[in-house]
Amino acid sequence: MLPKDYLRFKMTGLIHTDYSDAAGTLLLDVGQKKWSEELCQLVGIDIKICPPLVESHECVGTITEEIAKKLV
Image (tube, rainbow, N blue to C red; front, side, top):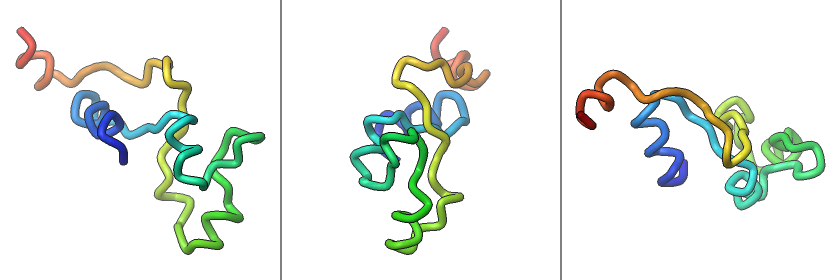
């Protein structure tokens, strides 16, 4: 999980990563815009642990009540 993904998780409780960061892992099938099952198997990674993929500008949730109270 990259720092911005962790920050998103702490603020929303949801885990995602964007395509550009996923491509940096070398586990992304760029043409299909999905995690590569073949590459994950090759390096021994269970594809189930790969987070959902989103566009960098996509809204993935709302901030938690706890975070909202801290921002008041």
